[in-house]
Image (cartoon, rainbow, N blue to C red):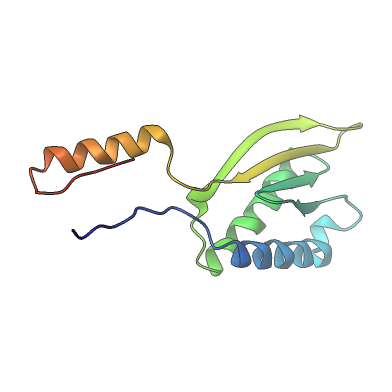
Length: 123
């Protein structure tokens, strides 16, 4: 019986390259001169650092533009809350989503059943 899988996963190599390009651009941009703006990488977690809210927004814009140029869908990003660290410095954790959540998988299964085609959905 034919089957297909629904997979939702970002190309992590392209994400890593986009983050490295973002760090290079941040290091060379005039408006970030003398600031501690950067992006750090871990497994599925990226951390944005900046001196204030405006610069944090600019770091986000740089990262999003680099991801878009590398054809990585920005809907994979899950932004955490903005945290203050030492003085005026800010950080924000951005996670890369992997897979389909349980609620979304149930919704997809329900849509398949409601379509009345001869297919069986399993989670």
